[in-house]
Every structure is written in C-alpha cells, then in structure tokens.
Amino acid sequence: MSLFQCLLVFYAVMAVIDFLITWFLSHDKKSIRFLSALLVGITSPMSFPV
Image (cartoon, rainbow, N blue to C red; front, side, top):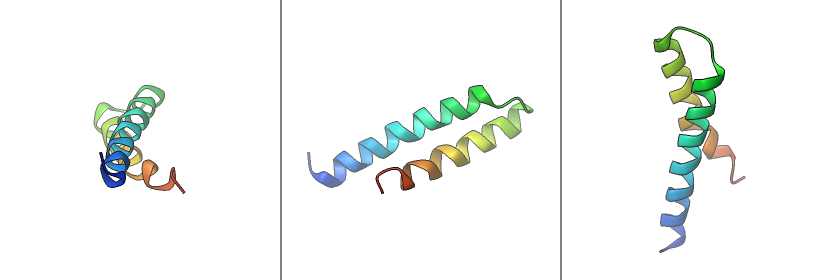
C-alpha cells in the first residue's frame, strides 16, 4: 500500500468516527443532526494529520 492509499484509508476511518461521535452527541432534528455530522465528518480529518 502506498502512502497515498494509507492516508485515504486514515481519512475515511476518521471521517466515519467523527460522523458517529457528532451524530450521537447532537440533540437536534434528524435532518440537522445528519447535516452537521456529515460536515464535521468530511472536514475534521483534513486538519488531523497536520
């Protein structure tokens, strides 16, 4: 596995973990919970390796 593939796997795993944490900690309507969990899941792994 190349370094790029390892980073993609790491990014995907962290995105799922962040999505689940945000989903279970938020207490809004389901549509808002999904949107906020999706946005956090997509954007937070980008800053993690830095």
